[in-house]
Image (cartoon, rainbow, N blue to C red; front, side):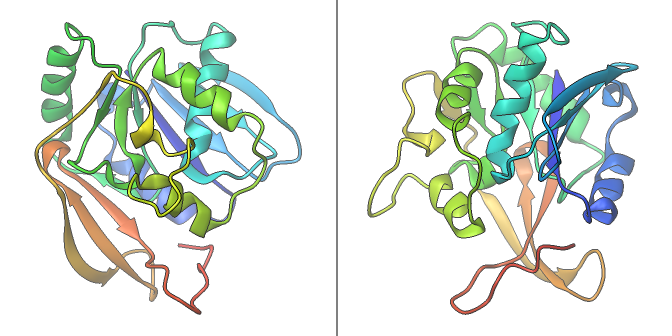
Length: 220
């Protein structure tokens, strides 16, 4: 399994916190996805892959980077990927819980497995052909606003979009547990973040709530 982590310059504080929480056994199988770069590139060093993209499409760039890694033969085509955000943090039980889920998924027909009941934050375990399916949809998109990225996350939009992964063809499943919202607290500094807890994998996700008239801070 490869971890796929999208990030941008300026989010080093968040990325470092996530990196420190990654189980040791997984630290040599990570794909870092840097967006808003000057050119597209991909390189591998000691098992870790760095993908740089000119575009900025938030976590949807995970599909681009995973497919690029497969096409470059840096990752096997039958590999599982864990799609994350840089604003996440693993807990002490994450490795055991995720490995147990993978053991069941590997002998199933599931190709996209949401790690909360409603697919919060598009955090999931995924493999082909769902990676290629998403890649074909997102490869022609260069920019998204944060509001658009959040809208595509949910399947109950007033105007459903094919860019919403929850609307894709069969092969999806999800855990029963919801992502529990545990209130606001300062995580990286004085700016409050809403804390979401993924019970199924002992993972915290830190959100900045978008509200009318309140722009995203674009920084941890």
